Length: 588
Image 1 (spheres, rainbow, N blue to C red):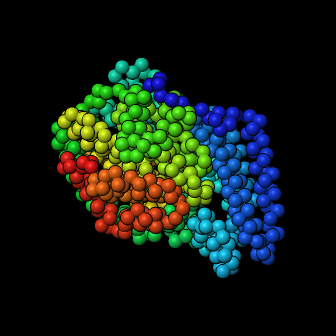
Image 2: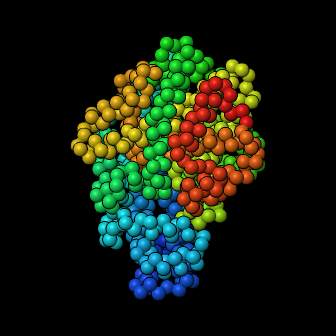
């Protein structure tokens, strides 16, 4: 895959460059100047003009910080084994914490400001209304300024450092390749190993999973201790100090979603999801000529994939399917490649997985993935470029209202995958169409069912760790979660009790994962509208994406004609999965 692009981070900064040093010094000077405004707030006597100037300077400081810290994060992702990148990441996290501490007084003042005066200030700055409203909504969970300062420093040098340690350890792992036909026996990285998980050969799928969990389980007790420390830290800060009702309610607050909405989502995924995916696993076993799937076989293709995609071919398919929906969507995707903001190369030390990093509203996002030439990689490309298009559509929002909340952040990405699927299905022969449909159903399970049960595992694990559970007991809880999830629809394999230590999201961002289930079922509901309305939906969806995070998610969805998000809504998403199984899905 030599044709796969590698990003050019020099478009942000060159390492150790004068520009980087000057910007780091500039932000230190400007944060001190901002802190000098503390005395102006003592008597709440700011003019409307001065208030607006402070909010805009706050945004400007955060944009510069995002640019510097974003460069550090991307440099680390570029090569997680690079000691210099690791050290610089630590420096920037410390600097971001210090910035946060210097600016803290303003948000604490704003939270406690007399409501009538706050309404007057907020009305004078309507473009920041949601941001200002959200800050005040956090009053009941805020601490005294001194305590907030300590927590910011603790997170930079404690929590974030432990997460970086987890990433550094796991991205350094190499795996035995001797079981792979044609291999030269040289160690391989995780991304190359996971190609075999979708092999047409049952033995290769089995050996790949066994090798993955052999390596992770060797460090399992240590990785489990990292997870225990992160979970304890999460509870200490958020439940004991900030008085959130439960560990997961913190995520609901930051997503600005009612608990009943998420409870409804998880309830439907537990009930209807188990039924639908249970039927699918049986259907897939029949298609593969097996009496029952093993867990090794969950992502098995119906036939050996003969096509090897070049990156250029993949990019062409993605831009065409985006362009069929809306030409602007295709252009926004193309921007990422033409500006050298995409890294798709295979190399040792590079961060695993895929992401889109949107640093600031006026900056083109950065995308990382690993392109190995498989159809799955084409879908990953569509997914991440969907994220990138979403960010660019929201470029007119201010920084504080730019990023969509996690559940809505998956809208463009998963919709992009469906657009690609529709195009590929339309051009496929019958055999390829069947194989692609099964591939889509595999991904539906991975995004809806699997992620919902990850969230349920997290809920249980957080409570168990509070009660002093050992790593072995957490493994057993994860195994019980798998048994509940799959029932007798497939045969489980013992090494999967270690799967949870391989999932970065549960280490990095507790309870993030339900956003995937939310986003996928939401997009299925959007797809049902698309099947009825066709191109008429494009304008509504583009407006939804352009809102970024400028309003509560339920408000944004209501404006797009979606909701209420109750059990019936989520069940409607499962109708699309049922339609795919019956061969009538993606017909719009």
